[in-house]
Amino acid sequence: MLSLKRKTPPAEQPAAAPPAPDQPQQAAPAAPAAAPPAGSITTSIRSQGATPVAAPTRDEQRAAEVNKQFQEAKGRLHRKLIERLNLANLEKDSPEHREQVRAVLKDLCEQEESLLDYRSIQRLVDEVHNEVFGLGPLEELLRDPAISEIMVNGPKQVYVERGGGLTLTNITFRDNDHLLQIIDRIVSRIGRRCDETSPLVDARLPDGSRVNAVIPPIALDGPSVSIRRFGKKRITIEDYLNFKSIVPEMVEFLAACVKAKLNILVVGGTGSGKTVLLNNLSGFIPASERVITIEDAAELALQQPHIVRLETRPPNIEGRGEITTRDLVKNSLRMRPERIIVGEVRGAEALDMLQAMNTGHEGSMTTLHANSPRDAIARLETLIMMAGIELPIKAMRAQIASAIDLIVQQARLQGGARKVVKITEVQGMEGDMITTQDLFAYEQQGVDGGGRAYGRFICAGLRPKNLERLASHGVALDPEMFQRRALLLDSEMSRA
Ligand SMILES: Nc1ncnc2c1ncn2[C@@H]1O[C@H](COP(=O)(O)OP(=O)(O)OP(=O)(O)O)[C@@H](O)[C@H]1O
Ligand SMILES: [Mg+2]
Image (cartoon, rainbow, N blue to C red; front, side, top):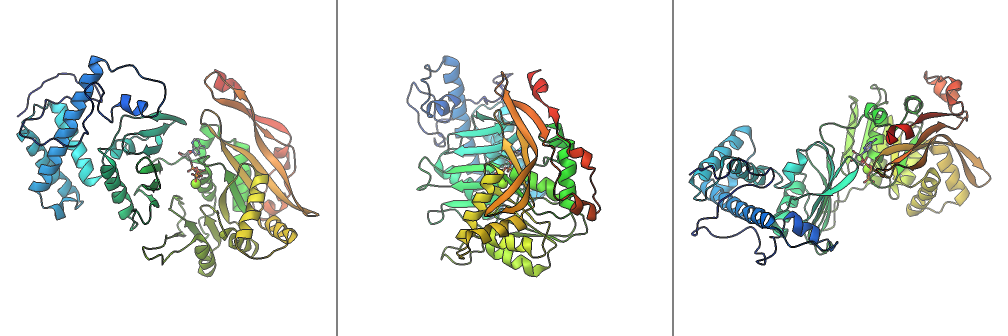
């Protein structure tokens, strides 16, 4: 039964009539009479314990009521769908099957005794469809290409990152179980599981987006999910130039270093863009070379034809079968690699990676969590110690100095912009110390009225030690390009 109750319902709030009295109530939890139901925007903001919020207006109460009824109708529809179709076949995913389910849903909607308008029916069908085939409430966010990160803090609070800034959404899950079901769907696709015995799990979505889930009892306020989006459109070097994350001179130099097989360490803080930069640097590897990539959850998307991608594996329920990054680095040496790319070093594999770089696998690259090139070297020393071999500090540093040629640091600045803030060359040893020189840098000069950092890129005026090596690999660079100067001021631009 269809009736156009409201001609122009507000964009996010569906219009739905009260459910028929014989329909079982479920889905939305009961809310106290004066408060909006859990999951409304108001409640989500309140639950952060921030500044007190005024009592809901009549409009807000009406919207909350409509939302509650919509959720109830959705629960009913989902149940009827399961009754109508064989459960075993329900999740079989093919275009024909999706169409068939959609048709059944539309049919069921028409039998709904509640008075749903056309838009609400469409939305109801979409949402139940998403529950059956997709990731439920997350689907809507995953379809939005402007979202770069999704953070679910329990069933009633979902934040997203757009253009570097965080915002709270009005997306909610029914309850913890609903959210757990969605987590299960994500991780089971790649043969992993997330339960009380393994409450931390890394996974990825079919589009390459990286997912981390932590569930109770470790996560205290309900299951937590963090999704790093790698949508259809990846950030390319052209984007880097457009976003002023880098300048053409730096790109030219980095491209030459990759082609000339320098060993490169990409460093930065969490979420600074290390993986994106590593992916872009890998894009300069000549197509003829055999590349092996090693990651925890495959995020890199190299375009070359000759790639072998390896992924680590956590232990199974009996604690067996774990394959670590270290195992894969060691194994990769027997796979005749020309380059080894490790998504991130964070443990003993650092030693194997350095040894590989020192023994004929030049041109290898990895990322490391560190806040400066100096910090990165100190961190590498710590990671090598984790490998459990007794190496005098001088020998360890000599190993690092001869393995790493270049350290590239990317940072997330105030306001969310990402910049390549340092390109640093490792020169060698002086006594016990590793010496380095910064060839290019980004100098932050201030923060504009909109809270965005501004500054300039500079070329330090130092001649790279590796210029001859670049030339011998056929990528000679003009020494003039390393003259000391400012390369690009973005201060005027961001103030405009
Ligand atoms: N140059 C850039 N301009 C704008 N956004 C960027 C840029 N580089 C990366 N990003 C965005 O920054 C976010 C983090 O990127 P990435 O996953 O590469 O970070 P990371 O340093 O590897 O993080 P983690 O430490 O969690 O592994 C992504 O959403 C990505 O799209
Ligand atoms: Mg990363």
